[in-house]
Amino acid sequence: MTDVLILGGTGWLSGRIAERWRDAGAAVTVLARGGRDAPAGTRLVVADRERDDAYTAVADREWDEVVDISSTADHVRAATAVLAERTRHWTYVSSVSAYATDDVAGADESAALAVAAEPGDPYDYRREKAAAEQAVTAALVRRAAVVRPGLIVGPGDPTDRFGYWVARLAAAAAEPVLIPDAPGARVQVIDVDDLADFVVEVGAARFTGAVNAVGDSLPLEGVIAAARAVAGHTGALVPASAPWLVAHGVGYWAGERSLPLWLPDDVPGFATRANGTYRILGGRHRPLEDVLRRVLADERERGLDRPRSAGLTRADERELLDALAQ
Image 1 (cartoon, helix red, strand yellow):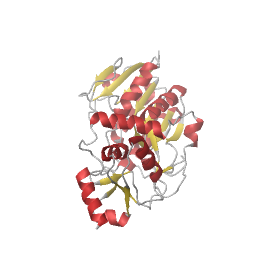
Image 2: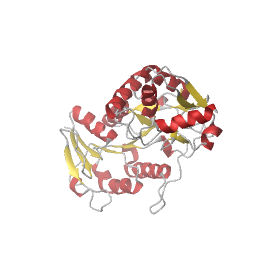
Image 3: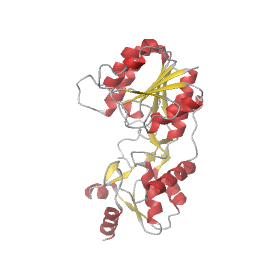
Image 4: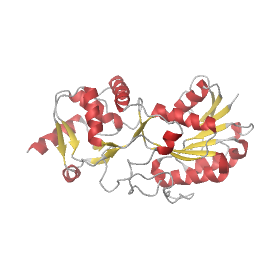
């Protein structure tokens, strides 16, 4: 039987990876801080990765596969120091944010990474992911896969970014919805379940190397149009220019009082990464409409008008629409 260790394993993505390995017949151990249930059929080891003894309980056996998704390089360095020599293959889930720049459209896995964070540096997600990759590849050499997803979407998304549009359009019904006037803006997403499947597949195949796990690059206006169709929205889409939105305190990409997925024009490479390697390795992309339907069902269950960590409140949006009309 394949012995798999998931460092994490109770989160949105890592829990799905643990379930996929379990369903494939593996004996799955989940190392996590506790506070959330591990997937049924897996063994939970409660440990704090901030502690020096975090891996003591899992360092007494050989592992066929270790999966880590941490965004803290010190955690990854510590894990590889203890477990690398006891592991046949390691899959590290990084991010396309690990790349040094986002200014080249269509860049593949050979693009330069950010300068790796050093212990004690101020936290920077891009540099932490780059440093974590460096730790894994240095310790595992030719026994490591590095998977670099783009924006992960799907039911249960804790970031509230992708789901904003289909939820807002469904809630608005026949009322107007504010959108960015950004004809060149692009979106590149991967469904969380497609990603979980892929992570398990590259681990089972013991693939070595790096791969961008991203969907096709799509126009943002096309994604909003597809969300509108799935949501059954019949009101007007009201565009506002980037300067106007910024002047009125609307942010890019994510966070409160933002228009999610919208990006400045000076990062043309962010949502246009090459995904040829992912496809060659058998990575799948479910149709956008299917993703949107799954997300809308989840948004309805959680509440279309619930407080969100990304996007505009409906009250703020109405104020902005009124200001735009003056």
